[in-house]
Image (cartoon, rainbow, N blue to C red):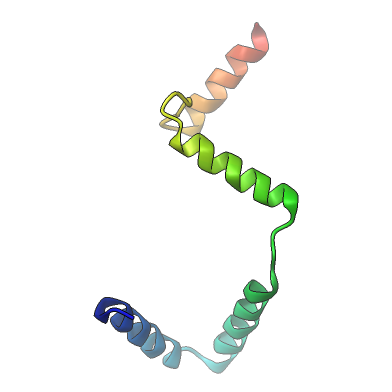
Length: 78
């Protein structure tokens, strides 16, 4: 573990110590759920597709949701 990683871990421990016990218990349950979760094939495929799209220099990108919907509307009108 690097010095920077250790510093992050120590900071997180300090922050957790300041939380109310109910919040800490909720956080512990959440972390347990994360450990037990394994994505299904459809989710894995969607994540791989998103990764491919994010690396594709030819993929369309939008600066806003408004621009995205404007293009979708124009395609539907064709």
